[in-house]
Image (cartoon, rainbow, N blue to C red; front, side):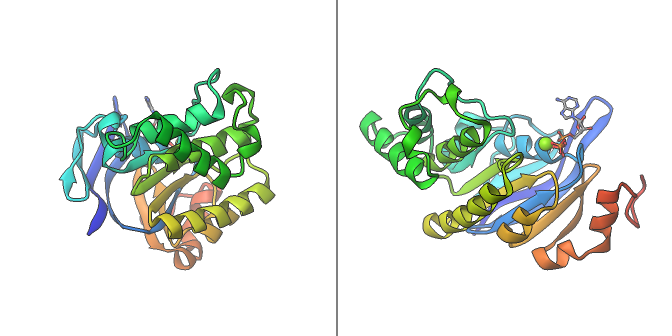
Length: 249
Ligand SMILES: Nc1ncnc2c1ncn2[C@@H]1O[C@H](COP(=O)(O)OP(=O)(O)OP(=O)(O)O)[C@@H](O)[C@H]1O
Ligand SMILES: [Mg+2]
């Protein structure tokens, strides 16, 4: 069954159309990168999928259920996990506690207690390589470590779809390579779909995504398998700041 379906989704801020008539489908277990230049609408789209914003038009369907107007906390138990472009940890809580919160509010929220949440947290903290920091205050982590903790927290929600906004931005290339390997492994082992919003086309996209959606001025410009999308001349034009052929900029 289709995991996520967007139908003609439009989100405006006053007179500005940040996302314009976006439609696409995501199947279980797919890995997709949504790329586009600054301001092309990636974070807004992400917020519409996760429920931070409700669109003016269109529908968001998750596993056949219309979730267009559900608040974020009601999407998480359905299996929508997410990270933030700017991590927002509970700074004075420990890494372990922060990740356990994910388990408590995720798909298992009604089924597991505190002890199991902490055990789940331990597992994902180990998986992202933060075991040495498990009892540290989250506020003391480096920016990269905070991003890893965000990912562990989102995974502890046991999502069917993991949404990541710029989760790899600012990381050292070596760490990005490690994350790509890690995300592929997680995707296979947990059988989840991963959608990542990425600011720039980089090694992470080519390494991680099976499919790429290119956004330009709020619209879907390209939706294709990765190799095909990355060799599309319109992608280069978009990143060089030229309006791609067939659009009106
Ligand atoms: N809360 C808001 N209020 C008004 N305008 C907004 C708001 N959020 C985003 N925008 C505008 O919507 C457009 C799309 O922004 P968005 O943040 O979704 O782009 P993005 O692709 O994530 O960019 P970046 O690569 O810089 O993260 C931009 O013109 C932005 O200024
Ligand atoms: Mg953004």
